[in-house]
Amino acid sequence: MDKLQLNSTAISLLVKFYHRPRFEKWIKLETLRSNVIEAVGTDTFTLKINRYVSTALSIPESIIEKLFWMDAIILFYDLVSKNIPTIKLPLLQPSKPTRDDSLSWDYEGRSYYTWLHLLAKEYGWTIEYVNNLDVDHVMALIQEVLTEQQLEKEFQWSMSEIAYQYNKTTKTSKFVPLTRPYWMLPKPQEIKIVKMPKMYFPVGNIVDLSGISLELERQGRLGNKKEP
View (cartoon, rainbow, N blue to C red):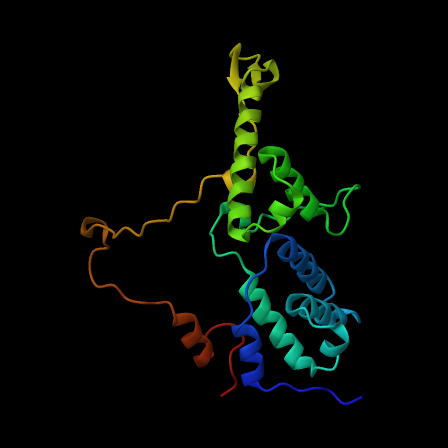
């Protein structure tokens, strides 16, 4: 079967008129995107790419399969970039990987139902209403709900005895705060470059000896001496 090859203009038009979908379809695409990443280096990589592009553009997968493989990959990366939330939230920043984040009750597509449950329970919204929300609004609201839940946990923690660690040596108790999620941790401060005061400069002429070892090696005075 001959491959259907798109030119750069056709690809640009497909991406230009593509609009980021509402929450329900967006979270489905995020699951498919994760599947593509997991399939890198396997025989199913092309299949996962085609499935993502097909779902994003609402084009039958049988048609996407006829595309030249490079066109499908270009479309995939362009569509992924269009689907990235525009709102910059700490919640959406990558977390530090751990040895095993898997859960025994996890399954593909669970993130959609987790977030849907969170919003429906908090605001009393219907599934249809949540599905049609803008992605940026969903992400911002989810972070606010999780923030409120975390602060409530910290308050409850501070009221319990186990939050205060007793030191037998000093015979005093010290409060141990509840661990916060990565997106609530303080941002690392940028290290400021401070100029060295003149009074700390070495006295006399400063000679740069950073390349002396290379020069001695070239002359055969360092390490194995070169034969004349």
